[in-house]
Image (cartoon, rainbow, N blue to C red; front, side):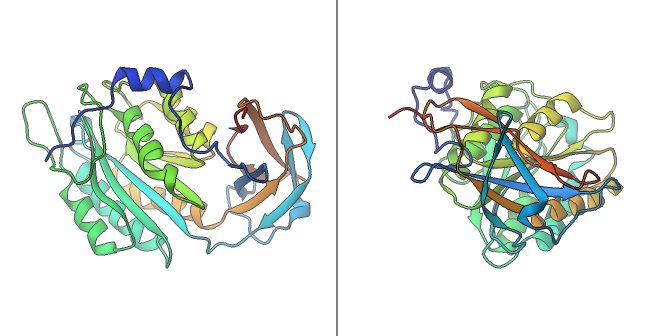
Length: 312
């Protein structure tokens, strides 16, 4: 049965006001007040750098240098992925290539212990496959995706995932629902990979609410901006910059393969850095984070901040 549109404005307003209890704050382990950051390091030629140690990094929170107490360069840590496919009319000519490239991407990136889900979004947000390690099931879900246009047919979805049903392209709703309803209960490395032109025309949640939900659930968002005219690059970069992901512009099917390779490389070559903040306040405030590299030819890609634990 078609997913019911039960994401109401009341729910969104309550979330924005802090009334609705969301997932644990991004990157925080409340029991020990530990902040965990995932970072990918590249050189000036955009090549991924591996083999670094804790001493190669400096972490700052609100401008204050922090002591890195936990460090890992393990490329085999499990990943939980959300694949979000834009099935609005604007992707009519690209969807076939998108589906083929998405299936190949999962074949390359997924390893033992990884799980992924598949969602589509247009006038609704549909869950086509819940979290699973079964590649065949994921491939079948991707292949079932089809363009939904006003007056046309649409995919019958699985699972009790709410959507806004407000009309248009519900891109922000899709990111919000993937992070809040699905990824919030998952542990470890979490990422959303979106294929869209990022032109939202129907969501009930606002852009900043979608970003904040990804941050609070410790989810990195990567976007393949699929559009002949470049799509909404400002929106795409705002989401990826704030969550520690990347935006890659894809203007043709031929670029999709390379774009997925770059995202796969990002996901599989991340460093984990943990620190206990010198600011002990449990005030629920947003704190800015940056990672500096001692080798100035290198740059680290990570999220720009996190939310401190709320007052008890």
